Image (cartoon, rainbow, N blue to C red; front, side, top):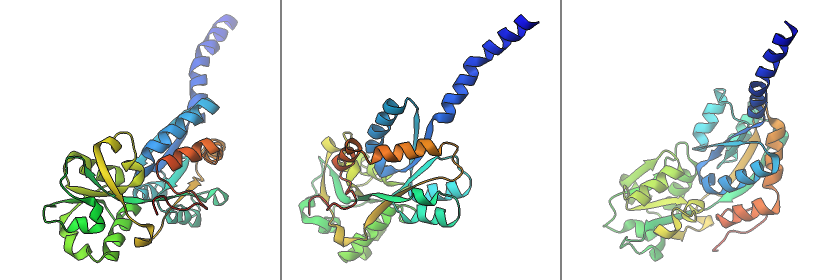
Length: 261
């Protein structure tokens, strides 16, 4: 009987070890503009800690609603710092974990085969050849709200609003522009600089003073069972190597000025 119990215990050890590994993995809800930068940073986290990272990309507003409904995320990286602030006010995020990690930038983007001249800036959107303009849905995507504000700033919004094709998030918006589902898109600079898009198109940087600042914030979710892992990821994000990655994708870090201005 003793030998049987010993065999049974030993047979359970691999499964138990697997469960421990899963518990140490980190699940991150991240705004879609972070898609490429965070894949590189997550790889560094996995290499450094030996623990896995599950990245879930989407719109900041949708993630906010999901977390309110108990979605099992450890960290929430929003393209609008207002969302994690609200979660803290609602008792759903750890107060001392909140900080602004970057400011985003928006660009006009067209595929290389396009005849549109984006050196004209926002006036490009008035070209009669344009039938569809891709922007992120401003109802829940901060980049969509910035796009609308920029068009209002240049007093062209009313003239082009009927041409909008709305992406669920900024990644889908970029896909619309890249695939030809739209003639032009207003997308995140971080996606325009991504290896999958940079060779395929051209962009014009929309000045930051043309729209409200896209201040992006992060917070640890209070219900997280891996808050220690979340803090380690945030520490890694402050390291020079991670900051260099963020800057390479066009993010403006706190205390620094925007590129191209």
